[in-house]
Amino acid sequence: MPKQPKILIYKKMIFDNFKKIAELKKLQDSFKKEKTKIEKRGVEIVMNGNFEVEEVKLNWELSLQDQQEILKQCLNEARDTIQKTLAKVMMNSGIGF
Image (cartoon, rainbow, N blue to C red; front, side, top):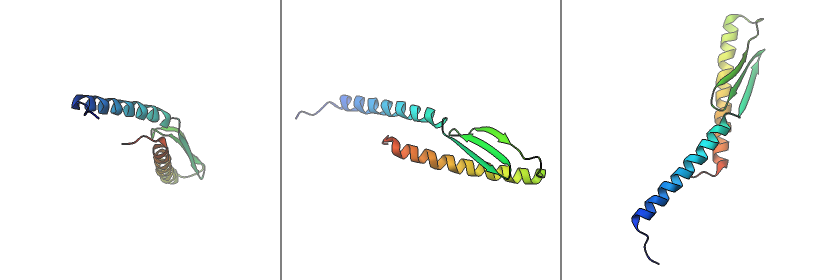
């Protein structure tokens, strides 16, 4: 079997990398559709897969300090949930690196 010139090998590598980039872009676009909703004591947030907060609902029956603490907990939990979800999506995507 004859050896392929190095330039053809490099072109194939570059083409393969462009395909991976296109697949990653599609995956990134799909991330925004992933959402998680966290609610604690009437304080609620919705975060999407791009880690953007889409909704915040506060419970005015709670003190300001309680609302701040619960909101912080909700944001941290939502971030962790989204990270785990996106990790699973990446692992199941079949995109190799």
